[in-house]
Image (cartoon, rainbow, N blue to C red):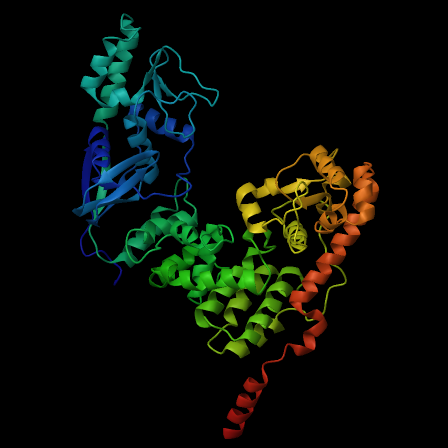
Length: 545
């Protein structure tokens, strides 16, 4: 078996005290995940309770491998780890080891209103571990768990403890501290240079317990070496600089699969298990292509920010496209923009997963033929209408299309009349930039519709009306920049919500259709053909055969 380990894992044991000490010195490295670990306070308390009762907590799986000097994050703690020829990396057990390390070594005083699950106290009265709720506060019988990690420190602290005369409490604290420090944890140390084998081991070990997200698994498998960026978090950081917002890491993971020509609709675990060598290094390889994707969306497809992109799935085929065709000709860019917009707004006979898979499959090294196959996947005819939905939700494609339509109207500040820079507006205020122009009385109220919103720095409904009332001379121009007609604007000022909603819905729907047609090219679908040069070259090739 080519994927078998050359040497059996070495079985060892370390006490909790020894494990925590090694992590604090940088001898054991716990992969850092952007969203943190998945455990909640109850999981951490169950771990400490199991140790107190002497229950098994499972073994740790360690990979012994050279490690560079680095600043390592262990939950909220930061460790300056030195270079090591035989560094230890946690393959399985990150959550248990992080919980023990942070719970037993974070600085005192402990937070009284914890924002992470690793704040642990020992309740000397009840003889169990506790954590404060978010309201804060610790009882007088509660002893901070970090004190119990060091016998000398605990004894010194107890000399000044207000409850030092309570023999029962003191006895419980000392016994619990001893049980914690001396609890023996089994571990297996793997020594291999074959990262494919290591990936298989990690994949199998991640099937039990509280599973990590696949974006986190990617970080654990590929984030220790290679050209930067190596992780999805680093890739998202690099792409955020482009100015279209920060891509979601789950979407980026599918982009990496598409980059390598893999089916982005299949399970990430399947790809990592079967094609781990292809995924390795994909983040750094994808960076140039994804930069081109974002630049294309802004300059050729009219997308000012990813928060306004109706469907992020288009990023996936575009990644493969720009990896194979980094500098498409002008005509190809125009046709590709048509495909993007048809994918965003045209109803397809295929479900989204099938369309995504076939879009990636159809892209090869022939630029123009790939484009023709892409365009053939979607209707060339315009839909009867553009559906913006009846209820605003910034997470949905319909509401995002409404916001995108508003962005293309070049909105101006209601108070000053100055042009608004949409990307900067969304970056700074996020959902607060999607301002309600009228009050909604219930979730089912028509006032919750997309046409009740404007793109603007945060304002209350009354502030919107006050701003419009002050702009007498330029009110019409400012209203037009928000796709609000004079009739709708007058209705807004006199609080005639029904008239405002009716007028604005009609204007927004029309503007959305015009915008979509401009980019999707439905009225010019007969011009979807390849370039004349390509057709002539193809004819010459056929004649030569």
